[in-house]
Length: 133
Image (tube, helix red, strand yellow):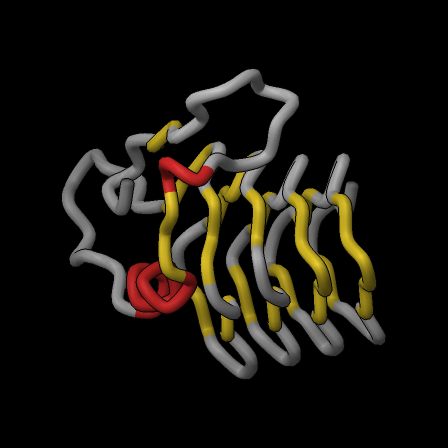
């Protein structure tokens, strides 16, 4: 997962976001993002996860995340908090989250929010270097 290989945890149909059988703690995700492995020649470090059920708050306020992040069709029990974070690239396509809090978020490249389902989205004054879709 950290060395660029995608991890697909979807055990049901692709239209369902997450499953109880593939729980991942948000603090584990944060640790993987904030302490990436040392670069290896020929390997593009990134975190790609599909179909996971994320438990707890994903707290990355004021964090600098150097690896691209792809969380596809994941279900979050609690808010995603990215206020004033700096990310290389982020993809939350098809995710379900109660709150997506990203005021002052800076994304060096693309921010993908296609099919994001959220009870509340706050993105006051974001800085997106690529596309936002």
